[in-house]
Amino acid sequence: MTITGVLDEALERLHATGPEFEGWLSNHGPMAVEALVRHGQDDGVHRWLDRYADRLEERPAAGDPIRDDAWAEALGDARRLGDWLAYFDRQLVTAPERPWREVLGTWWPRLLPGIAGGATHPVIRVGHAVVSLRAGENVPRLRELAHGLGYWAARHLPLPADLTLVFGPPVAAEALRAVAPVADQSQGIRHRLDQLTTLPEWPAGQAAVAADTVPGHLADLVDATVRYYATHAHGSPVMLVHAATAPNAVLRTLPDLPRELWPSALAAAWAASGAVVAAYRPAGPASPAHPGGASAEELFTRAVEHGDEHAIKLADTALDVAARHPDDETAAGAVLRATELITPL
Image (cartoon, rainbow, N blue to C red):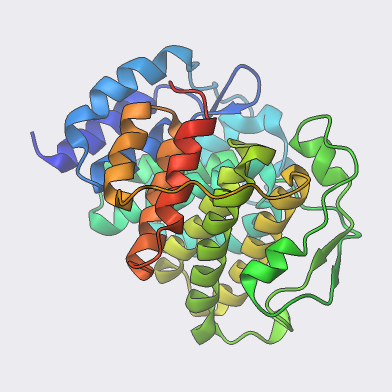
């Protein structure tokens, strides 16, 4: 069996399940198996999925079809999740009228203001789907993009309308450290995000950011959030993973988006990362974990053995950071911290 076959078989298994389970928890299966296959861990994909899939629930049924002339009224309505999945399945798989990149380019600006929805899991799932489609188009991968977009549409959640960007540091790492925690961290993410009133502006003058600079800015943000995780993961070792994986999903999607959408994608990625940091920021940093010479690749294998989907996703993003900064052990240290703090699968 080829590696491609492993990925597509895993996706077909997962597409019988819904994007959420136990009410609101996100199905990370498609994201994790894509990362496993891309990093050469295809031999363990079905074994990992056998353990993970026990908790998943059936794909929700469609009831009231989403109409092209009335989609806005259904945006953000989680009760319409099955309808949104069916809508994008028609758009991309069963009755496609346009290539997937055109569908993505149409819906990206519609969905981007709600990037915080589903605790950023939908945009992360879309990012993994786009990476797999870039490697080769087929029905399982197109359906995976449909599931990601449908999940995003149903869980679409704009940040508070009165959110104000205040003057912030010019460097991504400093901007993250300047994010103030929300006052009440006693409940779930929606309660926390509702309290968000300000974020540092980064990069300065976001509206004027040139498209050519966006990939570099996003890479800086991903680097900074992985390093932030290495010292602040104790605030919430699971939720703070998404401060890094959400902007990395945006970065990975950029090549398949029209360039005119890049600056707004950067602004949304920063807002998502900053919001997650504000929601789960601990009182202070901890000493970073020292990987003891272990490479990020070796620690990715350790994350796979650990089994938790968040550790795998963090390790996947950390590998991108390590590739950009091969002499910096911080990314590997972040993976080690994830495997220490997150309960194994």
